[in-house]
Length: 355
Image (cartoon, rainbow, N blue to C red; front, side, top):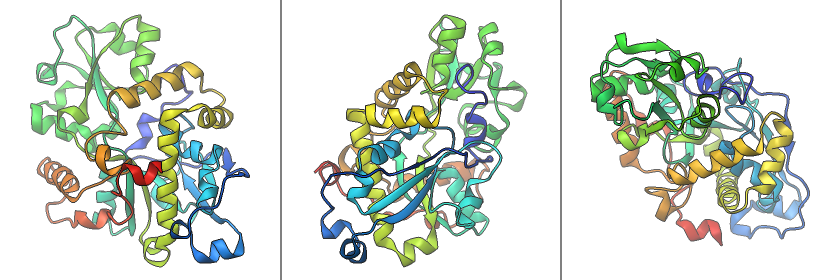
């Protein structure tokens, strides 16, 4: 986000390079009781040892990663027999390579990339979807007449190169946008602020605040997820081999992470403390803004997650997204998109994670 980070993460999250930064957080000692046997492998419980697990994030520590940090800070992972290290993301290194090279056990993925991986024969799989809605937005100026996406046809739109393989084909297919509308977005809101007739990409949790602070006005927010763009985001993905050989470990990591998110939404202070330690440039204003909008726009809890719990996924949702993006030319029509995910670790109901 411009004005908050030295380099904006949006450029790298989707179909782009991701890295592990130097910041590493290990789960701390907790006085909490051990998990019930059904939630912990017998070998771990009997030996009194914690299974070491690493989770790679897609950018520098921020509220969008809050539930994972919360599960470290409050000892939730330890309750599930896990010693979790969060390996902080950034530019330069591909996240899929981290998984395939055993640099991490789990990675913070994205629905569209998971399907692309199947097309390329990469054996990774999505086991949970923390974000029911992709936070991707277009923002416009108030009072300029661009108060819905239909009215942006023919208008200048600032987008990054990564958008060409994610949401831009969707916008072209659904709203008739054309490539001559595109303007380069270099993660600086100044060009958008200067042109009242333009639109700019961003995340609902980030760029609107930058515009408020630098432009002195509140932009109109068009959340693409509320306008037909339906990928799951901030997913938990891992190697197919781990799912097959150690499903108990995968289940415990998914369950504990989901509980961490419920805890973070209720009281983010413990997670935020670790976020600030891992990312000193993160400030309280940005953390608060992000959390407010995660809740306001139903990024985490909406749709199936309202009944089935955070992390929920469905076959229908994956199919709908795949078919729409295949029609837009992003995916090959014959791709076995079903291989990109499994539902065996989620959809347990809200009470299963809050009890």
